[in-house]
Amino acid sequence: MTIISAFKHGFSRVSHTKRMVLFAWFVNVVITLPLALPVLSQLDGYLRNTVMDEKVLQRMDVTWANSYRADMENSEFLRTLDYSVFGYAPFVNHLEMQMNGTFIKTLGGFLYDFFFRWEINKTSTSLLFLLSLLYVCVNSFLSGAFIGVYSKEYPFSFTEFLSEGARYFGKFFRIMLVALLVYFLFFNLVVDWINNDIARWTQAEASETVPYTYYMIRNVIVLFLFSFLSMIFDYARVRMVMDDRTSSLAAAAAGTKFAMTNARSTYGLYLLLCLVGFVLMALYAIIEKVTPQDSYWPLLFLFVLQQCYMLARLGLKAAFYACQTGLYQTISFERHLKNAGAPIATPNM
Image (cartoon, rainbow, N blue to C red):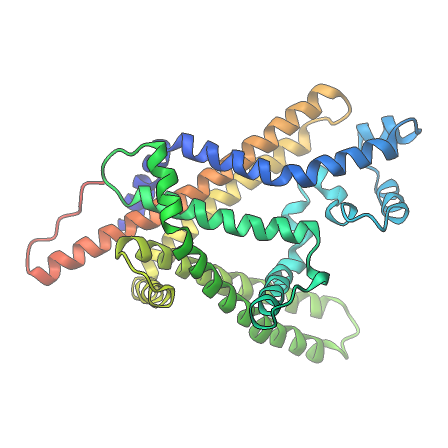
């Protein structure tokens, strides 16, 4: 019952922060513009006055995309382009990179060289990587702003939302560094160990079905462990705000303790919110699949649909913070009443 009440309460809080979610969407658009505009300009110059102009408008051609990659292999912007962005393939196209923690390892190596060797690893400083690093910093600001306002029971203004983000940015950035270290160790020690063992176990197999099955099992294990770690650091952020902590390590330990002690409620709520995300993903994929992409107006419709989908995802991210903050408040309140020997009554949600 606690899960459902926290779920309803969280989405109710998000419905009162629509301006904040819209602001988060706007910030994400601004971050992607330095990448999107040069890519569009380069594509326009490559396609203009060619026979592929109309064909590519009707449907993305894989052969043309590979030829474009070969002709523009020295372009930094090209490395950020994947023809799958024109369909719903991005949801699954780079799953292997995610399962191996490619970005986490790259970011971890970059920060290690920067803080401990006092040098910048130029192999990591692509435009896409730097924008991703900027996104991590922006996410620290936005998460602090959302949790800061969701922890309050009184109405708040947009100015207060921004001030909460600035107030907790440094603390949440330190939590992000702790989380990055944990994720880095997880992918380098646990995931790489699993990958090496799968390669060793299946090297004599004649059929590709056996290693494929092993890797699918690996994906399930990695997703479960990574999601649990992600949930723990969500509660570390919540406890940083609710307990007014200053130490990121103490907040991470407190978040771990709370998530593990109340694992059924915390992870049950996390899975319920993830289910909402999968429903959004499926709806977008279905609509994209049945929409013709051979003229201007359907393409414009899909562009608007994509932005609505991104807005919904940011709203869901805000719901994660609101629901988890509400769950922590409810469980803490009930525990306080129990320790005080008073009758337990659920706080007004």
